[in-house]
Amino acid sequence: MMPVALATEDELSEAVGVKLLSEHPVLAATPPLLLRKKGFGYLRSGMDSWRQLANHRIVIVLTDLDRLACPLILLDDWLGAGRQAPQNLLLRIAEREVESWLLADHVALGNLLGDQGRFPVQPDTLPDPKQHLLGLAKRAPRAVKDDLVAQKAAVARQGLGYNRRLVGWVQAEWSPDRAAARSPSLARARNAMCEAAHRVMQAN
Image 1 (cartoon, rainbow, N blue to C red):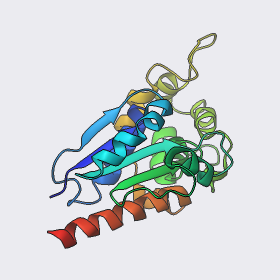
Image 2: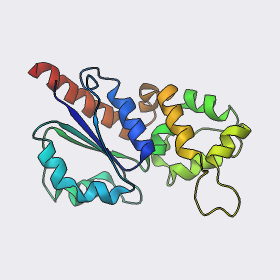
Image 3: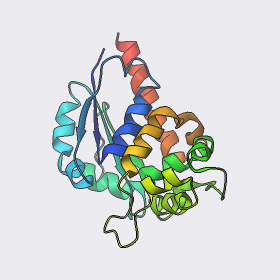
Image 4: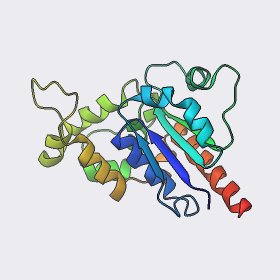
């Protein structure tokens, strides 16, 4: 089996990437090489390394669109205008943040936050998905709220237990299949991984 490397911005994105890989036994047959540091700068500066690594294994790079107008701008910047990524390099972009993918699974979200409030029908269109999630969390059960929402006067944007709570939730409850129905950017990421898995099966 061809090994897989997963490069991400943070712990939460890594958990999402691992969950996506778990949908394809041929890609998850061996534990992925996990490459993670804080922020997208690490991913952007490593593009030459990801290209080289893609000669020997499938490399999945997950990043956020953030404030850029569209994914094509990010792709041109990271890959070079008009350049294509190697076949085994999958550069996938969450619009606008990985939290939009989390917000797209209303079933799991209801289990986490409770049924109060309206969950976004098109989370990819939210200007700030993380802030939207934090807003919903303010009405969540106390233990969840305390983990996700920052205390008053805190410097951090989110609560101290934000990553721990959401990583565990992603692993246990979040469904990429359900979420992809409301998130086109997630659906594209899943399709790219499905195509990669098919190539690996054909090669074996």
